[in-house]
Length: 183
Image (cartoon, rainbow, N blue to C red; front, side, top):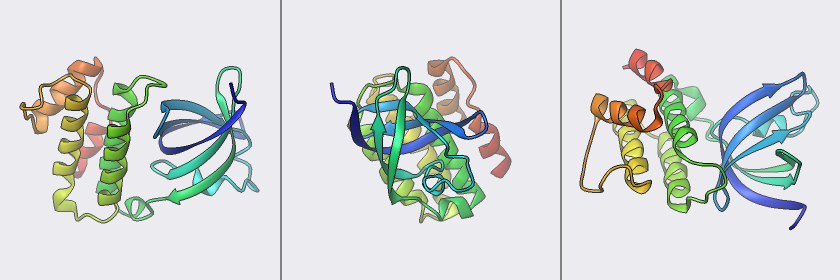
């Protein structure tokens, strides 16, 4: 088994650990959902910090650790800066990231879902606010179809879709409150 490797990822969740470290949940093109550690990334002089933001599309260079793999280097592919300039876009990106995090198991590759999330983030980076709710619903529906929770012919939207997702996850969708406030 190799000790170091690289993988293409999208950051879907972050959690600060201690004074200088951060735990990231990333969605990898070839490895699925992973939890990794960015050591020293919260230091003022960290050269990796600007790239390790939510929704960033990166190549991570990782070293295998006992519990979590550790980031050794970062190569940015797309940081989706326009998403961060628009509050409704941020809300939709959070919603897509939350669904991805909650519905996917760790270390189970999902190439179709990775490609769809990346595609939707690219669209979200350039879309007008009027199309955001449809983009959000379509991504949730796609996840349900792809993971086998819903037959492909079945279409749910709005609150029916959210209720079904919450049933599957057995938890409330936290980002829904933000989406509701922005509607």
